[in-house]
Image (cartoon, rainbow, N blue to C red; front, top):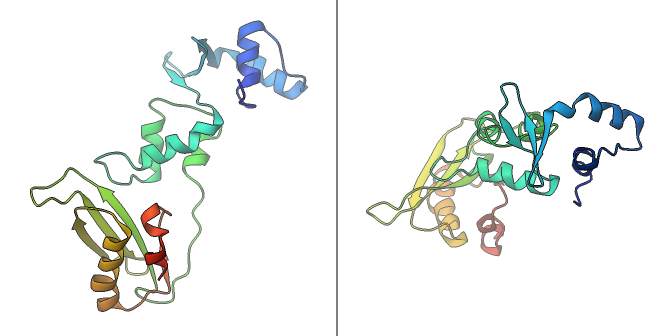
Length: 188
């Protein structure tokens, strides 16, 4: 096991060896009933006996992103992401990892800062399978367009023809850094 966080717990459950750090050892002994090792998979037992997988640290971000981008569910809010993940997984500090503290972002005027995101949905009879959403940070005004793809060219054309032409050029365009948003055409 190459996970520094889980290795001491697994070693303790397998062969009773404790970490050399006295505080870590004490905490592990006090909380040992919360941990179960089955077929080399570490679980956390919650009240009522429900088992939740404790994933290695290197997979946690992927688990969060997958729950955030849930198929057919759009991009879920932090509280719903936590609810989805906590049905199957548990790890120390999970709530904080999923729900980071919010910091206000100052905005100078309408359409000064615009957020953009893409939502996938089942292909429609018109061949569309994506919704590209532009949201003004100040007014919360959405501009939503359905498209058959999510290419950089499609998103750039929607931005220019439907957002910039109506509301002006935003000072900032915020995205989740998906590949379509990081292309040369989007930068231009």
